[in-house]
Length: 469
Ligand SMILES: Cc1cc2nc3c(=O)[nH]c(=O)nc-3n(C[C@H](O)[C@H](O)[C@H](O)COP(=O)(O)OP(=O)(O)OC[C@H]3O[C@@H](n4cnc5c(N)ncnc54)[C@H](O)[C@@H]3O)c2cc1C
Image 1: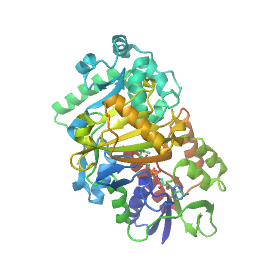
Image 2 (image 1 turned 135 degrees about the horizontal axis):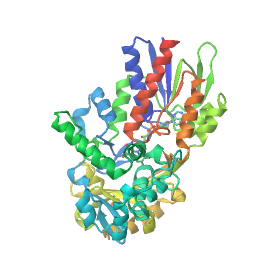
Image 3 (image 1 turned 90 degrees about the horizontal axis):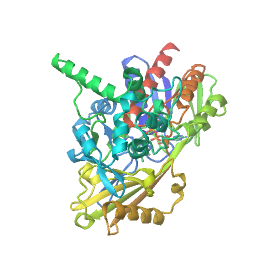
Image 4 (image 1 turned 90 degrees about the vertical axis):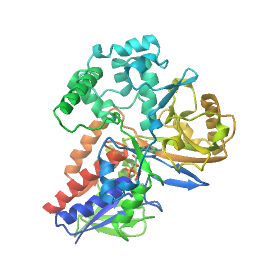
């Protein structure tokens, strides 16, 4: 019997363990899988906290159904029946600009009617098909791409808020190719974004006419999906499906060393474990520390991946006291507006069961790469700043009846310019370190779908290695 040790019990580590067990069995590899998680609960960034009738998501509040990975995993776990799609009104998303909320336009007509972008800005956006093409061989920042193709106003009011909503990131440092590879591909394949949209829509119409099954039009981003009891259902079901004793919590891995009779010896704060295969699903900065003594070159690259911190403030109110209909998903705020918060999600409008009957739950984000110092704010300061922004933006005059503040130090990896080169260098270095596989949100995507895709890749690589040995 061989042993695989997975380091880190977030969704990436748990999904790696799940697919390792399945694939080993399917391919006749006798394998014991062990997950070592530093904290007292598995799930990593995922944690659905129930308190006084409110359901607060500590980290992610769902996944998008436009990609198959999480949906497929839920089907394999037998929990598809419990999936909860976001309410239809969650399609309505807003940007706060010039003192008011503007609904994000969903089509050409609403775009021209919207007051979010000025007429000069709209004309500049309409010139997108004539924008200069991407400079060859350059890892362009999101800001440079935005200015080049869409103009400065669209960068400030559309791209920047989106980047802070997804990555808590700064578009002036983030890499287009690493953060949004599909957009970079569309530009190089079709010569522009408008051209790509027109040609892809035409292709879809043709395929439909030919009777082919074409992916449903739930919008390019898909529908945000979770569970009645929160997104924690995913890691909980994964941990339960792995079987008793597989996930060991409260086990901090200190180092991965080379073994004598087996390839690896994994040292935790309480024991040492032999392993034939090691899957490191801890964040890159933690992975660097574990690998420093055996492979300083790999640790050096891992340490170059920066992280942004984030603070989340959950506010609960009696519905009739809030004075706003909260009809939609919530809003994001461009940096130029000078607010403390990056945006606020109207969680109880997005999913049912997030607040007690007659109450609402709002979840505001602060910090990110543009405001790293905010992680130091006290709870009182966080609450005061969020109250002020909510007052200005949606006119809430009352103090919340329920407050929870969560801090994520090193919340989200930042795929800054050079990230693609770093990931390639890691892959090359790992070729000479067979049996050690890196997975998780530090490399090829931060969404839950990306993390699960990364786990599947890690498992394919790991099982192929075990079969060769
Ligand atoms: C506030 C926030 C909101 C988000 N919203 C969304 C969203 O709505 N939709 C979406 O798709 N994605 C969202 N994301 C991103 C997504 O949640 C993460 O990318 C994903 O959960 C990361 O999973 P992971 O397993 O790769 O890493 P993590 O969840 O960070 O797990 C890594 C695990 O490794 C453990 N670990 C670290 N060091 C050691 C060690 N030495 N020994 C043992 N264990 C160790 C940690 O304790 C942790 O449990 C959000 C992220 C944040 C922070």
